[in-house]
Amino acid sequence: MGEARIKAGIWVSAALRLGDLAAKPGLIVRKGDADAGGVLVVLHGRSGDMVLTQFRGMAGELAWMRGTGPEPVPEETAAAYIRKQINFDPDLWVIEFDAPDYLPPFEGRMI
Image (cartoon, rainbow, N blue to C red; front, side, top):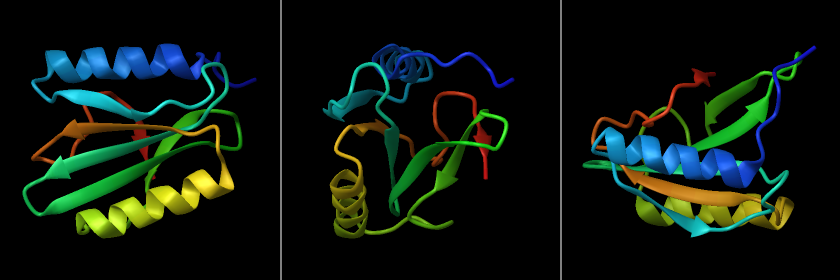
């Protein structure tokens, strides 16, 4: 059995609070489904942006993947990736953080 699932709106609020505590201010760019929406996280750094995509593993555990690749990309590339994902899943949340080190302010397994 997988871990308990937290509603997306609550998870987003907690992630933003963790960002504040870690001196990585964040904001909601797009609200998705408050109960079951997925989340995209944009990390803004010095060399461009990185978009993290939330997904669940085979056992239901939460994990993250660098949707735009292992290296930062230009803002336009990140925006195009986000648009494509929203077209596929209109319930997505999009949040972003100032993260010069490209590390999210929350813990999570990276794939």
